[in-house]
Each structure stands twice: as C-alpha cells, then as structure tokens.
Image 1 (cartoon, one colour):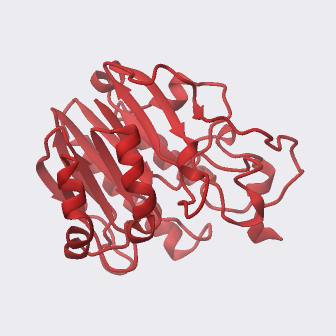
Image 2: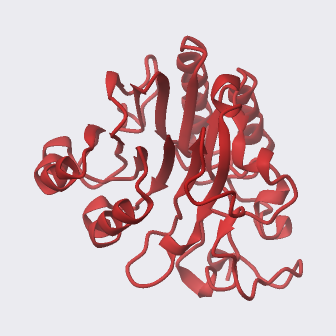
Image 3: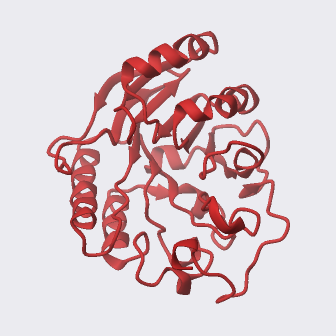
Amino acid sequence: MRVATWNVNSLKQRIPRLLPWLDERRPDVVCLQETKLADDALAELLGDELSKRGYEVAAHGEATWNGVAILSRAGLDDVVTGLADAPGFPHPEARAIAATCDGVRVTSVYVPNGRQPGSDHYRYKLEWLGALREVVAQGPDAAIVCGDMNIAPTDDDVFDPDAYVGQTHVTEPEREALAELQSLGLRDVVRERWPSERVFTYWDYRAGMFHQDLGMRIDLILASDPVAERVRAAWVDRHARKGSGPSDHAPVIVDLDEAPDGDIGPVVPPPSRPVTRRGAKKLPQSG
C-alpha cells in the first residue's frame, strides 16, 4: 500500500498538478491539507475525477482556509472529522480527519502555524497538539498520523538553524509537543530510514528558496510499530514541487510491504545546487 501526504495549498489551484500526479504515482491513500474548499465544493469540483480513478473521498473543509481530506482506494471506514475537545481560534477549524484504510487508522492533520512565539495563535497551536495526542492515544495499534505538522523536529530539518532564531516551527515547546505525540509509539519513518540525509518538504515561494534547496521538513508521516515495520520505501517527491503552479510543499510518500519504484532515496529528484553554508541565506521575511 502506498500512502502519501501533501499540503496542496489550495486544491482548486492545484488540480492541474494533482490529477497527473495521482496517475503517475498511483498512491492508494492520499492525505491532503490546506484544501481551502468546503466539502460540497470539493465534491463538485473533483468528485467525478477521483471516482473514475477509484478513490473514495472523506473531506473536512471550509471555504478559503484550512481544510483536510483523505482519498483512498483501500477502503474508507469509520470517518471522523475534527478532534474531540480541540480548541478553536476562536471556533474549531477544519484541521483533522481520520478514517480506517485497509486496517490502518489514518489521520490527516494540518497543525496550526503558530505565527509568532508567545502569541495567542502559538498557544492555540500547542493546545491543539495536545488535543491531537489525546485522540490518537485512544486509537488502534495500527496507525498513521501524517500531514503538515508545521514543526521541524530537529535542527537537521531546516536549512540553517541560525536563520530560524525567533521564529515558530523550531521552538522547544513546539518540538516537545511533537515529541509527546510521538511518545505514543509513532515513528518518523522518513527520518528513521534516512537518519543523516538532507531532507526537506517545504520551500518558501520567495527568493529562489526551492532552487537553492533552502527548506524545512515539516510534512511528516508518523507510524505505529505495526505499520512502521512494513515500510519498504519512504521519500519526498520533490518533482511535484518543480515546474509551473506548484504548491510550496512536496508530497511525502511511504510504501508499505512493497516498493513499486524501489528504495530510491530520500528526495526524488535530489536538488542539483543546494546552498549548504550556514549564514549564507536568511529567511525571506527577515529581509
């Protein structure tokens, strides 16, 4: 079974990229984030195209902002939208959806950004992660939690730790909240498979960040032991971030039981001219 997660940064805008990608990579389960579509609008826009490709769809969306979905050709049972007891900002947002696909409980999440350390939105982010942990703790042994975590787990997951001083995504409280989630027995299968490789999933649109491979690894697939033991390949489909009209995130793909493309490396294709010297570049918003 091939499982993928992708923050598409507006599903409507990404249709010319999504449908060919589905045909090329043929994932069995796709977790989407930042769909920015109400459920009825998503069904009207993509229902027929997804159905003829064999996908069932579970969505939890809202117009303009947020939104998550699961596309599955491996069953789609016991769908639950949202998180029990999750905080809102000020109202609950469409940031989580779960379903059982071929015996695996799959949860697609779009974790709040946090905006500024110490802000109300930052505190909301930490509270939301706590609610996610409580929900996942009640789940079955075979589980995947994946999506845009908006947290780089370690300094190895950003192009230059010095560039992120004072920014969200890298602070200790955020990383501790992610570690608490993982303490339920969830394994970061990409990092586990590629412990010392440079692997990013997000690159800012500005300042040529993608072409210089100045990114962050904030899109994760976390799997419980029964699922993680089945992993045969885990990689970032960087090709989907290239060309015209891409999302600023690349899909993350994990193959269970068999690897149709082989164990082909952490990032496909690898960047050609990455900037690796610390202090060489700042974040665009710092300029």
